[in-house]
Image 1 (tube, rainbow, N blue to C red):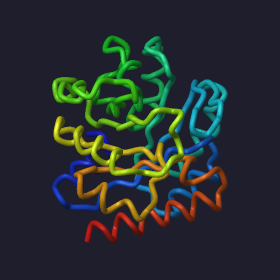
Image 2: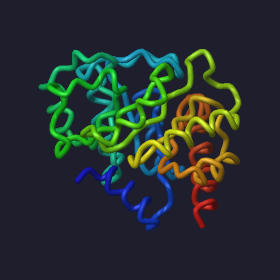
Image 3: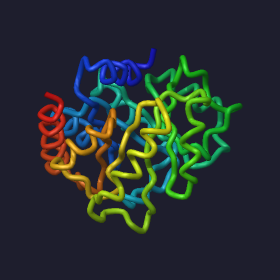
Length: 237
């Protein structure tokens, strides 16, 4: 079983606190180390994408491989997921190579997840994301799909960085009512550690921090991850 999925099952069984996931703004082993030292449970990295929130262009597997292998080594037994691209035209051979190198799960938008191209879930688990322009009723169909985790990337790109509101929380809660899948909320809006109790009250299993709240330096990543770790552990008591 995917280590990521196993951790989420522990959250649902109330055997451990919700997960803190670090979505790195660049494939930098120093940032990965800072996030792990701050208390991240899971790392997420990228290839073949232009990342809107961080403004980073992530290169190909060949370009990023050396840094990613260092990040996997740093992660050790902690799961590391990867965004392999932003298109349905993904190469099955590349995805299998990523599995063989030790990545634990794929992170893709639903619209980029082509059933005939993805490896079996026994090789790479699937965290598939709802997008800001997906209709709300789509969430009611997720339990019928071979996916293990839903990422709630439902905020419009032009609103990135604005304060978290009750409107946002209500949208998350509506999806929580529509699916039994574990839910991960990324910090597209300015989620702070103080908002963690509200998210956990809805029933969110994981919070994924990124550049919007953690910045791009080793110092900000270590400090931000530690602050979210304290908030999650405190709220889960």
